[in-house]
Amino acid sequence: MTPRELAIARTVIYAALFDYPLTLDQLHVSLIESEQTPEEILAVFDGSESLQHIVEYRDGLFFPAGRDDLLPERRRRETRSLAFLARHRRLLQLLCALPFTRAVALSGSVAHLNLEPNGDLDLFIVTRGPRVWTVTLAAIVLTKLLGRRRDVCINFILADSHLRLEPQDLFTANQVIHLKPLIGADVLATLRADNPFVARVYPNASVGQAPAALAWTFPRWLARAKWSLELVLGLPAPLLEAACRQLYGWHLRRRAATWRSPDQVRLQSDYLKLHTRSHRRTVLDRFDAALALALRQAERLTVRRAAGGRR
Image 1 (cartoon, rainbow, N blue to C red):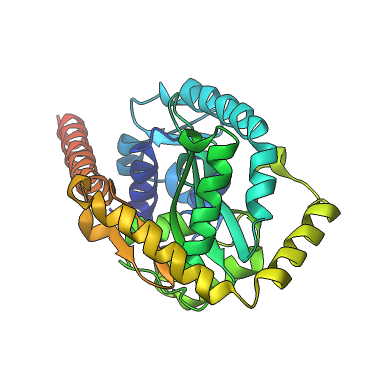
Image 2: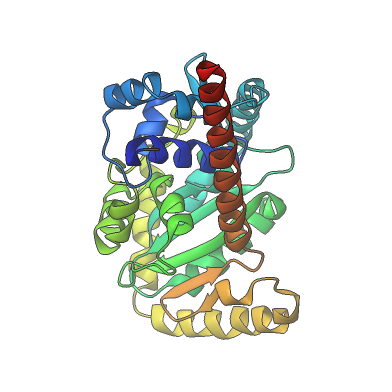
């Protein structure tokens, strides 16, 4: 297969690991290590018998050959995701209003509108200065008070002074390009600039937008309340941050024995990564295996058809 054909196959197969067929625009934006335009993607697909053994294009969606079950599943998950986000609209506004939050973005399956029945609200947060522990604990308290703690997963919080991400691989890059900012789109643009590996993996991607269901004008009273709290807390903020880090850090370390992926946990003053059950290694291994299988099957079909033609 040519590099362009392989890029299309890799992208579709990676998305299918999450049971997610892609529109042409989505395929273009998330095309792995290739700068094809949408028109070029269609031309490559239409002209490649090998690629058509691996990928199907129907009803405006690209998906692995034989996986047409993904088409109705995408519609079901999108409907579920929009209803879920509508129920949590006020909670998301309050989380965006927490003092020292510069960016709050949807992450994971809910950012794709691909929520499973028991899915939760994954959030990626950037704080103003080294306030990651204060913001994290404030978010936990808020969700507990509102009875939504089990619905919300806040597992990646970093300061705007530490935007460099690790590890720098396909899995991390894919998470970054699919972040949907509720506030702080400019911060996510800076995040991209500080992590050039993302553009190398996904040269067509740009900062995304939140789902239309969450399009809001941030209420003035919340904006004023946020500004006022930051002003009041400015002086004692370092002491408050130290106290939150000691308290919540103690709680996290106490549960360290239950972490399934301790290598994906970082407890720093400006970088709090709590991927205690990371799927990173599993996803990358499944991707390699699925791609290798698809290429072998496509090669066998091509050889078989060529042999039939010679007869």
